[in-house]
Length: 190
Ligand SMILES: *[C@@H]1O[C@H](CO)[C@@H](O)[C@H](O)[C@H]1NC(C)=O
Image (cartoon, rainbow, N blue to C red; front, side, top):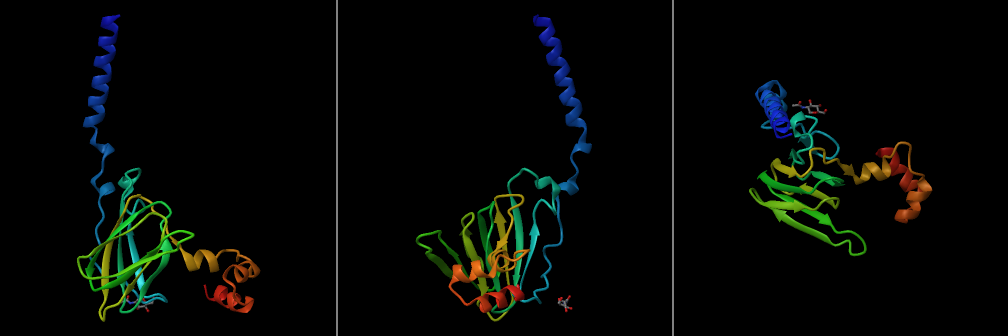
């Protein structure tokens, strides 16, 4: 009995030793990404650009519960209101100054907002709607870390007014108490 379990123990030890030395299991490039030093092109309707470093860019992040994003902002432009369904975000400003904010859930819907300068850090709690605006005259750059390898993004204007197919104009007109034509106009733009 004892010798059988000793034999099994030795067998499993050598099995794991063989695995541990099999470094083809681990490739440095699965844990590496280069290229986030470059400013991204912010010539678009909102004037900002997100360049993520999540599990899509670094396969080794799978299951590790962490990712990053670089955000570039043109002067006076925005990262529009959005949520991350699977992550809290902590953001540091590398260049420029940003007005940032998030809104607490119903019934308070309290706007928590602040003007941040270079090297300031701010936290956006998981799932709350948040935004940033570059309030400086030059470009702004921020880096954010998120506690999920695939944090997801729900941009509010896109999910509400840009659903495919559209959410019925009646529903949205009622929800935001606006004329149906105005709602249809917003839907056609997004
Ligand atoms: C940035 O994007 C715009 C719009 O797509 C394009 O016209 C412009 O050439 C791009 N600029 C650079 C430097 O790539």
